[in-house]
Image 1 (tube, helix red, strand yellow):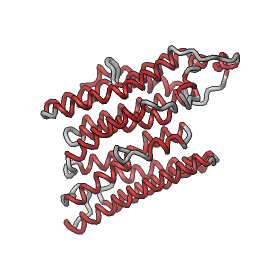
Image 2 (tube, rainbow, N blue to C red):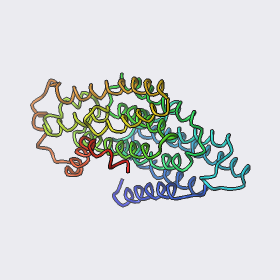
Image 3 (cartoon, helix red, strand yellow):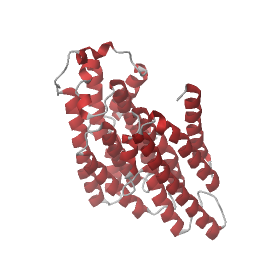
Image 4 (tube, rainbow, N blue to C red):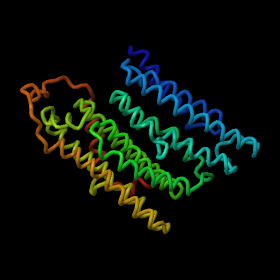
Length: 345
């Protein structure tokens, strides 16, 4: 794809998200979601392979179905209440429909089946956009409508997502599929806390965006598409190997990394709300995610693959990504835990 067209696509993507985030009318929110979907389809199918075409088709079908459901739920609400205002959705059936549509947009279980497949058919850069930027518009709609959404549905979606996100990632060998299940699990934690405390949800989203972007930038630099590829990262940069290990442990939620903060606050809040069984289940299923993060960290740091002579000179290759940005993001993704009280203000 030529740079001018790529720039137009990325700016359309940004425009669609911003329109959705700033709108108070359901039709404008829907238009923003549609612009967003249509802008990313050429980016997904850039490589012109059958896999990328299939991924673009799957993405289009699921997102179009979800957008149509959002429009249908808003029409039902407008029919019943006489207003198209996003914050005034008091009709229960339309709220349930909206919850399921946004779950499909985000890739929350049980409507998650498209996400690993689409990521596997995309390039690493496109996969990064799908699991970070593409989550902003649906999350903003959840934030705007949270007073009207059914808390039980959101808690059930959150628990199911953290479970499936953990189980699904266990037997994967492709880094993109592992990141897809990681995204499902992290969004499950956000869906769980959304009906209880929205500022923790936003903090969790921001930390998730920083951690995921940092890890994807390392995967892009090292061209690691499979777990086997990560075993030669040491030849590219030993410092990157160390930072990648810390990043993976931070994504798993181990203290004293940044990723521990949202899990700690969410579990504390669930306990305060007397949802102790849910808190116990969430903490238990997060161990599944931690297992595959630790596994990746192990292969990156401690496994030495059978090497040809060429792999030992990978550090001679030209860098394809801005290293300062990567280092800033990875530092934020590992060392922000002491600033947790400031982030919540």
